[in-house]
Image (cartoon, rainbow, N blue to C red; front, side, top):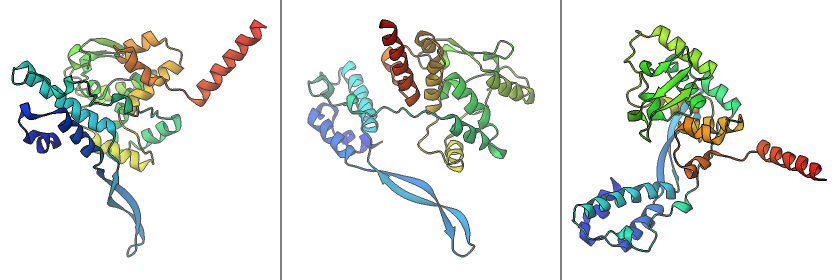
Length: 283
């Protein structure tokens, strides 16, 4: 880890706020190198081919904050163990700038969803039900991966998320849409009918499959977690009370939940229309 290569070389008692601040500046000034697939034409065979290309982009403050949060946790552990009396994060200087983070508000459009599901053919058919259930239930990726058939009640169209599988360590119930229930029914019919088996059969990650699906259907800047964001936003737009949506999504903090309430052109116009009606009635 980059922390080990930099601040990790210092004795824990010698780490000062200025060291952390220097690390922060260093990381923010170090661009991120990523590999992307670029479509080009092979001059010899005269056909389109994918070529990997390395591009750079500025490092996000959110990424650096996650690194600093890890460092803070380690220093707090050292303090709890009596290895240090105070941590650099205990002082007045705010080393983690959470307010400077740009919160994601990426929501999948209906047209993009169709393209995404259509791209799940041949070797990716196992991804289709995963995407559909994710965008219909707002379940977290880890909750989806750990879901077992014993947790699914298809006749009642309900899913139980076990406390040990939830981020908040609280059990909750989630309803299934008709299409998601139908998709899971197909999976169940093809399965060995073992209630202890994983529903989606995924034990590691879908990172590569997700990346290739998005590239094939021309969808960019979409993360799997954005499906949860999309589902939460749709529940709100559908008129489900915020208190119920929080129970469905498993949010315990209103501050975190409010990040999902995005203003759109339609919602802004609708709110203005409602105000017009109110003003007319007042007259």
